Length: 402
Image 1: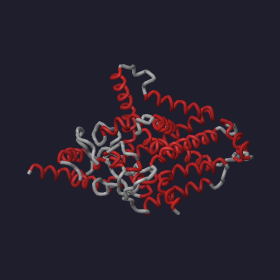
Image 2 (image 1 turned 90 degrees about the vertical axis):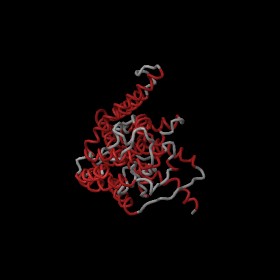
Image 3 (image 1 turned 30 degrees about the horizontal axis):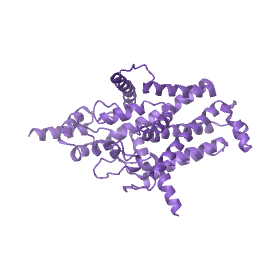
Image 4 (image 1 turned 45 degrees about the vertical axis):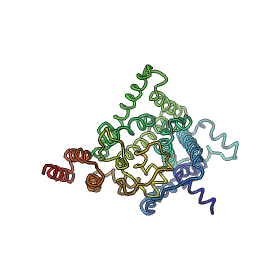
């Protein structure tokens, strides 16, 4: 029992990675009921996120170093899943002789098993590849690229991000987002009253502009040309191009479309996360970040499934803290209304989102905001287009003037 307890304590953060690996094995062997299994997993994840409750415990680990090989294994597993997806898109060919290798090892004829694949099997392959790319870039890739003094960790983090088409994350996120979050300078901070769909475009365009500016500024300080090999943005985009070429080698332009579809899914998931993590929060630009500057979430399944990034308040208060040491801060930080998945679904319906979040924004202003932030918040409320926020701002300004 102790072995199981230890295994769960360390392994629970890799539920999505393990699911992706099991699903990939099922995909390789052409298990016909895989689409139904994945639908069941999605439904179960939503139910568990809603029903398991919260986890506000502070954990201690005897062997935290094991988290690094587990993360590295997850990244490699995710690349393997993407290559199996590319292999399927290239049928009836045998990309990288994957089928020949499996047949030599096991005797299983993978080409024959996939001769009559249904739409459900292709959809399953796409879902598994997108899930693996999302975990490899948004969750684990995010964690690894924060370890700036660990070259192997950063490389494997960027490798995962390359399959999700956003290597910009490893530059713009630690050096831009973590400096500018909750201020107008951060395109990944959603403004009060802003709907999710226009936010996607503003955020992605703004981030790509800023990642270039960040690298240009860094290289100019070193006296190096922005067009040199030292430009991490160019190297990242080069990694993404190599992945696209790999998919083209597997299945021509169909493969490239498959890779673009993966990238679109991952970028969409990332922008959902960006939107819900800081929506409407205000910070004075020259003041340090506090736990009040991120929407936090302590729902158990979100905690496990996002590799603890749901404890977002502590992550922004101290970005150097490894994910397993993040604390819950249930009382000192604003809390999301639901777990990550359900909050994202709510964000996809703007009227519902504003109906719930307007009240939480007003609560943040009254409970968490500093005096300077209250002034900025009142101005943001007036511009929000949300009648409830405008009314709150007018009351605050009248009270301040009295």
